[in-house]
Amino acid sequence: MSSFTAMQSQHKKHRPIIAFIVYPNIKLLDLAGPLQAFADAQDESGVAVYKTAILSLDGNSINSDTPVSLSTESIWEWTEHYIDTLIVVGGSGARVASQNADLLAGIAELASKSKRVGSICSGAFVLAACGLLKGHRAVTHWESCEELGAFYPDIKVESEPIFINDRNVWTSAGVTAGLDMALAMISDDIGRSAALYLARSLVTYVVRPGGQSQFSEALKVQTADGNGRFDSLHQWMRCNLDQDLHVSILANQALMSARNFARLYVAETKQTPAKAVEAMRVEAARSMLENGKLSMKVIAKQCGFGNEEGMRRSFVRLIKITPSDYEKRFTCEVNQP
Image 1 (tube, rainbow, N blue to C red):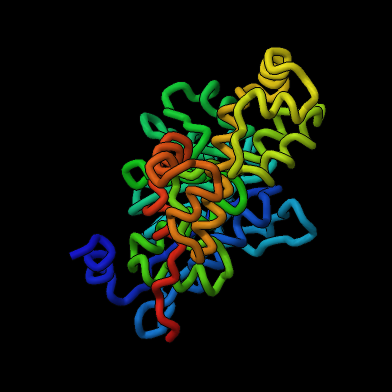
Image 2: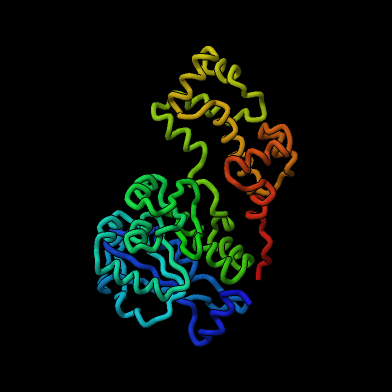
């Protein structure tokens, strides 16, 4: 019997409660995506699986980072409830919230009675301030991972994954990663098929694995190359991934000597040309696998890996998952009801 089935048997009269903790100046999308996923989740009979709640310290209306404000219930009115999942939302107000002793006490009390706890984006700072991330692996938005690790050295902060589940303590990166985390929780609860169908109905990625990188390799290169010196070269590279892209070829395209190009490229982008090429090839292959129209052999050739084994090694090295396992995440195997 799964943990979810056992929990259902124990709480037959009540749907599992997913409670979101908010505070002034949350990021609206951090809440809206996961909230919608849990609200839309249905069992095989088409009955809503979860009950959702939005909680704040005092139960007043809470301002988000948009003109939209949120109606909430007080944390203290929920201390006698069994909460299946407690999730702290992120936002620009997280740092202030993490210093509010009353809020932290309320979260800690609810967490002590919850099956699992989680955070979205900078909500990790609030969980950390409660002591709930101590000794756990955790992630937050890539821009804040270093800060989280510096403030809380007893947390094993990882900057790459879009979400992490470590002993039923879940943390996710920013914005859309919160939706990925919610879908993964739903998959754990009621099965992958239900999560796949839900993801399709939300027109989102189909249950992305948590080990995927927070943002694309192309964006990483563009971010590192702040001066945009190699923008044209990068565009050319992406259009010619099936070609020989050794340093001498790239240097010739950039109208530079191979030695000077290699030195300057590393200085500008913080990675070698070879690593940039590999990253672009993996990203292109990921897109083709998501589309599901080409064979592994064709994808490996078109993306310049040479063969399927070369593509497999690059996938494992860069995104910690094999191409075949990655493809399965994007296979629509759910029949329309």
